[in-house]
Image (cartoon, rainbow over all chains, first blue to last red; front, side, top):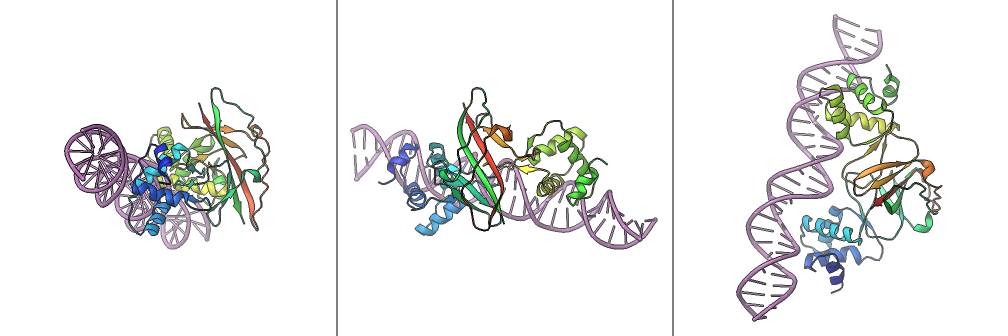
Amino acid sequence: MKYTEKLRNSGLRPTKQRVQICNALFDEKKTFHFTVKDLAKKIQNKINSHISLATVYNTVHAFEKKGYLKQIPINSNKIYFDTNVSEHHHFYDLDKNKLIDLNKCDVGPINIKKKINGKKIKSVEVLVKLEN
Amino acid sequence: MKYTEKLRNSGLRPTKQRVQICNALFDEKKTFHFTVKDLAKKIQNKINSHISLATVYNTVHAFEKKGYLKQIPINSNKIYFDTNVSEHHHFYDLDKNKLIDLNKCDVGPINIKKKINGKKIKSVEVLVKLEN
DNA sequence: ACAGCTTTTTAGAATCATTATAAACTACCT
DNA sequence: AGGTAGTTTATAATGATTCTAAAAAGCTGT
């Protein structure tokens, strides 16, 4: 199966539900941003049957831990995920409440001059807020 | 009163509770990060009496709208605020779950090359995740 | 194919942050 | 001082997320 390896690699058995989640996440031509609830709704419309929220949460978190999904740093009481796991950044349109990708090449190199003892940098993420 | 103007400026009457919130927020020598619940607890310890959560939420939001407080862009289901409203960035220590300020001068200039029609940049915020 | 064991799914409950409500209270203006 | 509009408060409502435990499905041996 197309996603068996990805699932096993994330420590998950390739069940019917998880494959459906994979289809919704990784079959798209374009990467996209989502909340878990959005994703669950999308899947249910697509397959025309119910899939438990808990399952979607579990699977999404397993993928995030493995690096197949990323969280988007934005201050909100919802958690936003991104299927684009390449190094990139985001515009956040404050009026439309919408996230827009910024490719790595859209942002000049970022030089972090401060160091913290015994810590290494895992990621550098930029959020650019837009207004009219 | 010390904070009357700040409060009026935010469209708020200078009530006893709001002045107490101001004291907790703006009397500190160092700026700090907080969630609304943290702040409420801090105030209650300090003044040794109860102040309603709703009041703290309202006041904090009014200050944020006016730019006396800033939200910190970090993906979490809690909202983090910062009393440091100057242009600066953050380290996020993933192990300790702690935010650390990065002064503006700790980060080289950031060049956003992409433009969105009819939108202007309101802020550019960098989150640097740290691991061991 | 099947028994037996483990993992997974599920609905629903629990939790936690935040926001809404509406009655009691307070500031402010004259 | 009194009237009006803005505030505080406890509590309820909401909404996202996590937990739970029983039922279902996957996996491994045979």
